[in-house]
Length: 243
Length: 240
Image (cartoon, rainbow over the protein chains, first blue to last red):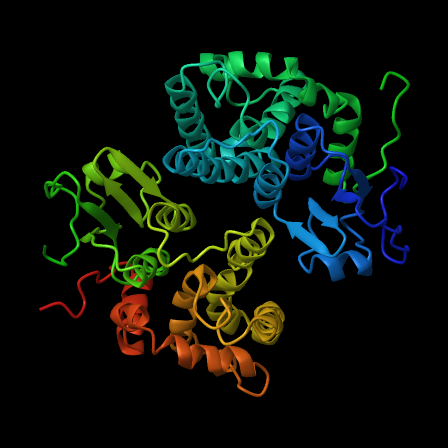
């Protein structure tokens, strides 16, 4: 089983046994967390290889020319792009199905993911500059949160999947987990309390065993975040004794 | 149905039950992806073109993001070109444009989901001419194109092998617009020596009825693009 330490330029690729599913990941990456949530929820056996995303190993770029995580590898098959990885896993391992069968429901869920990627982009912009400099970003964020609130309310259940967790819940969760961590240490310019259904959802999601298993340690995450702001991301922030 | 773009203050043309409608814009590459899928699959549909600078309220009500393409059918609304095209392939599976094999379907999706690395250069190349970083930009452009050249060389005449698949239609609209780029940056031309498979593919694609039907001449694309940059996009250019 490969170490948790991230692999960087000049490292050797850990050997992958025939028939083993491997996910190339990074401990603090929200996109990679999407794939880990799906793998964990569906009880799919897998091994994790963490990648140093600032100094990528050459062998990783051979597998994924874009050099991004998550990337799945099993035998000679490689899949990348987080939403594609998640869909692929759901199809190939059909137990505990996460995607709705109805094509129109599938389409509506994918549209929510597309709107969400705009939210992610605006949120990142907002986090990297003072809010007074980017009022349009803040307004867009609030508009998006309204959209998600309506979407969630329309689904008549605690989850985007209705009464049970579905793919959309896992695709959105990693960013809300981080918002909750940030909210405890910095004043955010928006409040989740203004979005009651979303707020409830952020309390329900941590009850899901897969969410618990894949949860970030807030302290480690904040240390990692600080290190990225300083221009020297520490992908191997040491685990504390509590985790 | 008139092809003129409908803008603010216009009335939404009534949609008959059971009719599939596409909200579009004649020069939009993303909308063109969905037009290509509809035409290649011989799906009956009507088109309503939208003035994207002065969007009608009734359009925003259908798509809060306010972009085309948007499909409307009875009470169903689908937007985002990749979502529209996957949805169409599910509902109208003949001919199937996305493989039924999960791995092959994923590989195809990866190709069009990462095509943004090429399309972003369509905007960066003209800027790089102005700021002197064209060479660097072209190298990035060629590196990204090589991914598609290499993939195509493993698959056949089309990305779908002997016939086109969703990948071919999802990436085509930008290849059609290369003549707009080459006016400012001749280096952006697809060199048959460097990209033999993509070059042949471009000629083959031009023979497809769906491609011919959505094709706009380079002069039209140049005119539209210039009008867009000047802040007054000429959505109805070429209409009588």
